[in-house]
Length: 229
Image: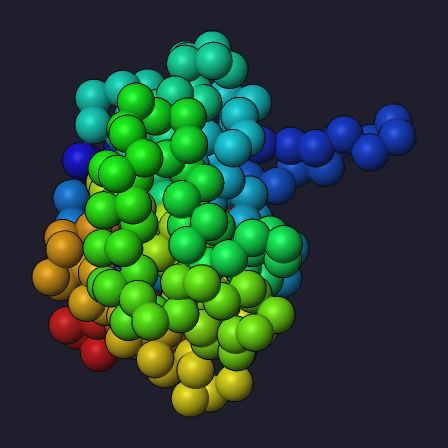
């Protein structure tokens, strides 16, 4: 599922001020690519990620994903498109503390037409992929940070989305846990052929990506392939 971004602009309004965040962003993401977005705080990385994921809408420009211009979809259409095509991985996991690991991973499937047995099969497989099938009955408070992020990744992949978007997935982890999470994401990319778009400040995390693109003050400054490093 190829992503094609053209002339993307985004501003926010604060009081009477218009604050530009992204300016004339154009680039493509190939199917199966692992892309890292880097840049200083406030450069627009997370905003760009949210636009690609259909969480936010641009002021102008287009984002065509798998032949669909997601900037032209209604809110209802966009919600349906996200549920089918995008898995989300956040810095702070966003797990619900009163639900078990199994129940957290099952959440994206609740509104689907899958039976309870089919949902259990999907959730068990997702937890197996991240190496936590033996912790499915544990609550988030009973898990380490690295394990919580693994549960969050299982939740992101349980619907088998084409695209994974990750916002600082190692930002709240120690170095060992961060390396484990990046190893898992690398396997999801190489073995499961997931297209991954990741915002990160961590150069070690960025090394797992195929391509690194840099944003500075809302402008795409350059890109390089890891093969050239």
